[in-house]
Length: 388
Length: 111
View 1 (cartoon, helix red, strand yellow):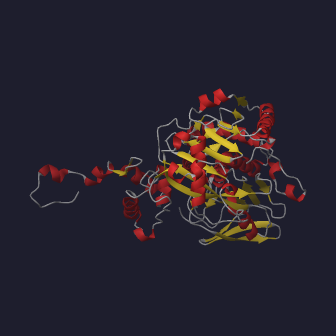
View 2 (spheres, each protein chain N blue to C red):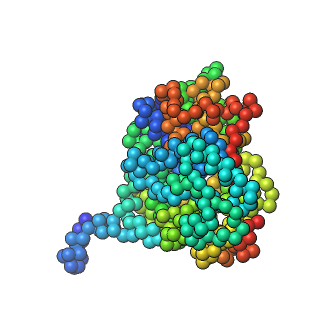
View 3 (cartoon, chains in turn yellow, brown):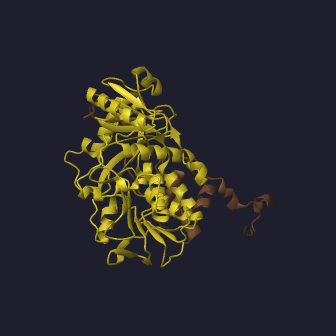
């Protein structure tokens, strides 16, 4: 696609958050939308994520967003005209202590009150759902059928193809180097390929969004944290027919319909020292492989003979309360943030539509104002008890 | 198809090699054909990692050992960019697929 020097809006970031924003801006009628990606589309967190989405959160806003996302995910293949590999058979949350069971019950109560019919499962029901699971040490389970997973890369590319059809100009290998600004308003984006004049910029750069905002002189607390993950060779489907997840010990694993088992956990579980703040270095470590295969074999003993083919890492976009940072900068008119707080694949389609509606229509059906980062200055944090 | 002056069979001269290549399975792990690769390169999926994320080429047990060079050559042919200038994708550990029980810590301890 050829370079253009002016645009109605410029979206920074070609992951799920950015691509969905660009798609909905164009779909809602904006003519000249440009998307800039410093590498290739889906090369950041989206293409490296655990592929899952859920409505089973412990905070009201996340449950509302999560539910809206499931509604959307169920229709995406049809809307975008490309299969996204949807698979819905819930997250099986596993508790290994009584406190965790209590937390599950609290979460279920809140979820049920917001129209998410999650429920506790008995040991027998858990075994029926995932016949290979090792129940030793488990205290309780909960589950919601409509949670699940999809192919994050295909979902990202499906949005890309749809965005192209709507006329979005997508520029890969394009690095944002600065912004054109007047007093209190953004006027353009500077890149390694040239400048683009625009009055609207949407920063959807995920873990790098804090750095991009800093180029406009804005201090917005988003930083990166490296998480690791592995995939096995494809095996017959049914080895892990539901998404398994536990907060303590912290792990998740799932099997894509295609056959690969994907498993991961937070960095504090296998790193000897705490993960450094603003750790932007991708890389893979032996400690993770050793720890994660151990957990996988223990939780799902039938995986012992299955071979690991690949391990990789990706950046979580960390915010002070691990919640989304979305809205227009008060001190910089036209400069928008659309950062998910490490759930870009999950929330992307809904967050993108919400931001596009707010920009074009001036209103949106979801409580977007609650996600503004001005909450931090007021000392307010969004609470969610269902985050590892 | 180019003219051939050798004494080979007339039927052989009739073959359309471009078309025949379409059915070749480029990625044997994921059973992706040359036709599929050729379909997506002109749509802008012209690096190895983009095709990998789209079609799963190089994601199977061989991790791209079989298909990477063929795909890079095909991208080069279709885009005119020399192979050395096409991002060739990341090669990730482990070097060969390895049974998870062989790397598992302490026979599968949580902590």
